[in-house]
Image (tube, rainbow, N blue to C red; front, side, top):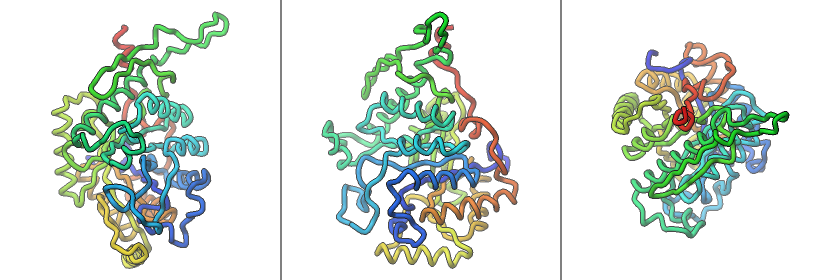
Length: 392
């Protein structure tokens, strides 16, 4: 297990509505009437924390869900509508103590100044457990909600270049307050040392942002940033801008290939800080037997009227069989996994109450949380402040 970092395999779950299968909301164990309540999301994250998971991600977009890639559909038999992921994470944070919270936020059409203070606020609310999954959008339907530009005029490379600048601006704004900028000395009447707040003066193709932020530097300094990457342009974005990269191999050999390509992208980007942590993605249908898991998927496919497809590997089997796969992929070069439960809460509970004990028995997963930040749990040191170094 020499390729693993930290205490063995890192494990996370991606929370999406009633689950990743479009018919998940029709399962008897689903809670479709509660999808837009705080209690529903709190229960899911508390269960994930019960299983000692590293973090959860919360899906988000700027348009309603669709079975089509080119815009809205006319289906009324699938979940439509969602809550804001950053706000959900901030609501859930006080109900948890250890688990990391990485909401998804779209960088296309939004402003980095707003998101920088939202994630910084989440880091304060959670006492150093915040992160962020950055997502670019080429959707014409999403662009239509804003009316400022037509994303059809831009290439994928353009959108990812914009995403890279967006993340850079957010990171600079997090550093625009030095760690000791707040004095809070009532006797002298000095709350802040203005010399330790810095203009970032970012000027690029996509953004011109002066700064500084209105929110002090987050407890982690830099909350971890994640991206989902399927191919070379996104690998380059991850190498330039991210701490975590979610990848979608189909087998252990593809894990090795993807890792080589990402390390090459890091070299090309002249990356000098911590190497990317690679997390493999799988959609999981778990059951007491592989036949039961496959039968549940088949039943859900029948309800939806078509076989479920995904960009990630679809796994249907037992927790022990999934553990076998995770260990083999970890040995091939992955630091951890972001699992997508097909049905919530049943597959989440199968992860926390079935998969986790199996991995613990094999000695590749923690048996308790240690105090500290999300960065610390992922083996990422707290970075220095770029502007403080410039003033020394």
